[in-house]
Length: 460
Image 1 (cartoon, rainbow, N blue to C red):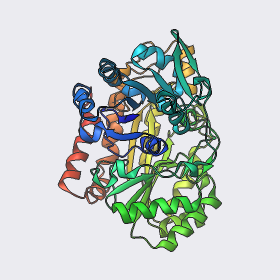
Image 2 (image 1 turned 45 degrees about the vertical axis):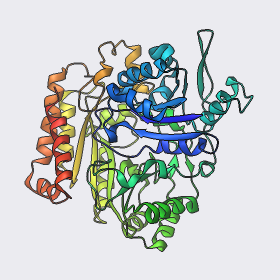
Image 3 (image 1 turned 90 degrees about the vertical axis):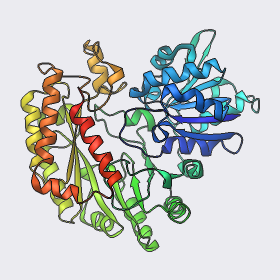
Image 4 (image 1 turned 180 degrees about the vertical axis):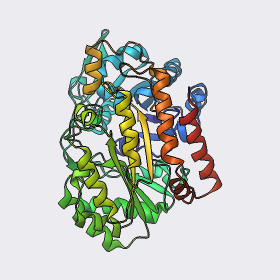
């Protein structure tokens, strides 16, 4: 089969390689012809997608689907069906609500996968190309139709993730991506994201991570990780790595051993954890090893300055523990970026103001103030759905800067005003403003940052 794997166009200001599509490509390329198309990087909007299909001429199109992609993907699928191309969806949204996703797209989508799809997608392609007599019922994670009825198979999480090999970096070309990746700032360039572990055992009510990769933490072998980093360094010129795991530091002994092996390589690299790490997994020895191997930035999901709201989020952390963790990191002279959520269900204006004050209490180099998004399948989403609070959600505007949802007693304009206030109070402090301006690498990088700032500040 000739397969086109697609990252759809959207308003995201993170332009970075898709590891998910890279792993999928590796899993199928021995038996099928595959190409990866990043529509954000190439600025291919749904209206231009037909030209991409005419060029690639695929038998199957597989599309990565986040909740904010739904309406763009709907248009893309219609273009595919006019050409009688088989269509497959995967990613966070189908993983969270597979039945609803099949219903939303109707007959324009033939198949979707919930959870990790490397094994199942390969099985499906073999089935479609008559290379296998496997039944649809035996394909892990697959949702499909038979006589108009939707069937959904159980998710499958591969224990030996080393067996997946590396993402298809030759199809991704990470060295060609712009200075607009996760975290917005960087020390060295080019940058590549890497995944070291999969799975999340925690129960944060706003997070859908465990719906995609399960609750059990699975680790690659250290040799496997080192081989990938060496390949990216020597073959693609990568000089900075972004570890995008949900729980990179959960197994401290494993991470320390990995970092000792990385240190022996003596590569000229920097690295960061822009997706965040658990604060309660850190100690002095680990932080020292991280610093010695090139770490310069730790992102933390602080989320709120209110212990009451942290409790509702089931973060299993308190503001006092946050203070201690930040103090421990700063002792090692590592920069910290903080993530905060504004407008969580049950939050009041005073809770939000407390969060803004909390963000100013620490020596954070950057902060991002997201408005709460009710991600389908999460505990908070399901609770809002039970209480009839989701009727006015506009999934065409399902972005962190849009205040898609507002808690009782706070309207959208008020929440947006609080978000703007948070950004301005944080970044317009002279010392913070100057520190960030000094980290701008080029005029193109400055233009990206300026565009990102106005996108977040001026969206109506």
